[in-house]
Length: 124
Image 1 (cartoon, rainbow, N blue to C red):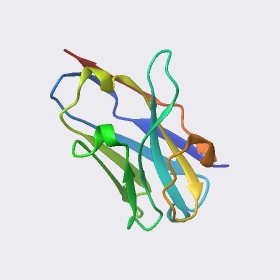
Image 2: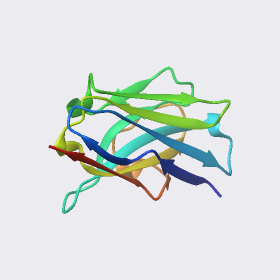
Image 3: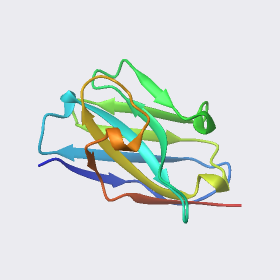
Image 4: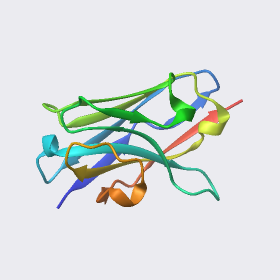
């Protein structure tokens, strides 16, 4: 049973930074592509970033390019999402999700397992 636990969310001023983490247990971490998604109130869950199991391929939503960086540590079995230059519109619950393989899909239905999410709130 795959289990994902996100952490690192919180309250930050606009222009600030946060680093989210996602730990995985239950299956071989290095076999999975990891994605980050977010969901703001009354909005659909949307793709943020993804990284392949090898770390060689990444994908980003246009609205985070140049501000967010996804990375993974296959030894520590942790995924990071470094978020810089945060904006109020980045306020959402952030989820990590996994799927086996080495591609970096951007659709939520392509991911098999999800964490419970961590709240990020960016104040003006």
